[in-house]
Amino acid sequence: EVQLQASGGGLVQDGGSLRLSCTASGFTFDDYAIGWFRQAPGKEREGVSCIIRIGSSPYYADSVKGRFTISSNDAKNTVYLQMNNLQPEDTAVYYCAAWGAWYYRSSSQFCTTPPRRYWGQGTQVTVSS
Image (cartoon, rainbow, N blue to C red):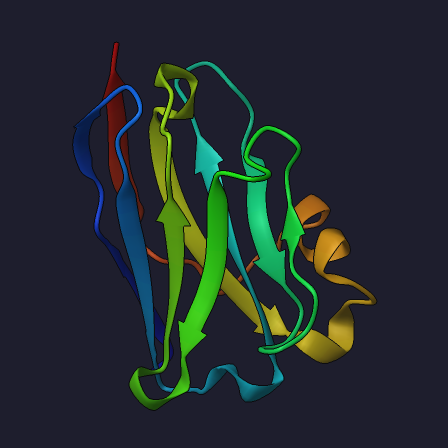
């Protein structure tokens, strides 16, 4: 069974850091595009950072460039999102998603055209001012 397990969210103060983890089971990331998305109350879902294949050039939304970093640990089949200098506007539920890399031309396309499957359950990030 294919599953994505997201974790690492929490409450942090303005300027703080968190690292989100997304662990896959039932498949490996070798040929899958991976991405982090977020949705704040009353707002549309936003692609935050995506990578079409591990080792390829990642995409970052303008709002997080220079503050967020996507990385992976192949041995653990886990993708991370390191979030530094968090701001209150980063408050949202964060989801990881994955789909076949063959379906996309670029990391940015994955972030702007998120897949129907597979999605993690979401992890809440709250940044207090």
